[in-house]
Length: 415
Image 1 (tube, rainbow, N blue to C red):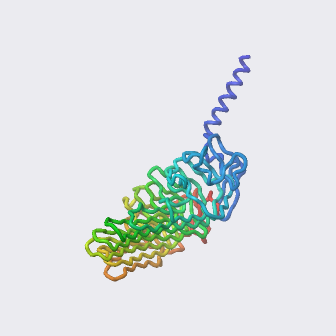
Image 2 (tube, rainbow, N blue to C red):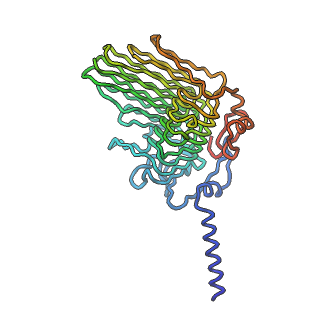
Image 3 (cartoon, one colour):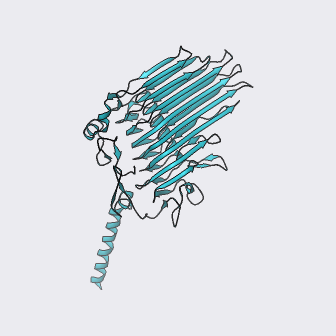
């Protein structure tokens, strides 16, 4: 009997040790079930089962899985843990996760969402109505990891009369990434575009108007962390105010970045890049001359504006062309802030492609065009080479793969 109990105890301790070392971590169960599958130039790890407490997300939601748009509904809270278990080809209109069209309220995502080697493609978000945040997730304050978002179209527009509006935020993965939000090893690519546009008009009553738009390939506004991620997205942002009333000052501020519209985290953006073209435009029109008005743009190949310390953008690069345009009548302050990497603000150990087309115009003339040269200019060919990137950006080959033709790709994502 003692021998039997002794053997049983050893078996139990062995099992406990195994479970402890296993830790039900995503890294284990997502990569050790079926083995590795080569997709494009990315090495994809595909898991076939989930640990307790997780919910699978599939195209059809069969069995124990749910569909993508069930996240945030009854029984599947925004604080839950979710992992893709199949590729999802959405193929049409999509409402940002976290936005409730019935109550017209937005709940930030605070859980975990894992791509698990699969992709989400062909999502179209078109808004001219109630919500302020547009993206796969309206607002993220949790962990989003390994998301491959392909062929996404976001058109986030609003036109209001005699109202003061909240800002608009648009990004492929999230309109806003809050201070507790982490976006890790994710990208938006294929044929993707993000557009944010807000127009305010005042023709009765008096009062200030402020139109502000934030657009980014990945995130409109970043207050959290974005690490080992990239975007190939055409990004545009437009803000416009118009008034025929006295004592009605107007402000039009437009922020656009290939990755992020505006960053306000001192350690927010690390090991990232963006390759899409970026446009920021602003317009301020007034027929009364006694109200001070401002019309500014912030356009950067990676980030429109970096409000944080230089380290807010680190070990990153951008390649897209940048355009900043102001068309204003009687605006007192008109400034285009633009740059190949960051429109306004600094960076650390970061680069911009030699030969980017950087354009800034103000109409009528008399405004200010302020170019930002942060980021070291380098040949496009360097940004595709493993030896150059690992030496100058210190990116790990455990995370990124290089073929010399494409820009670096994330190993565990689907392309």
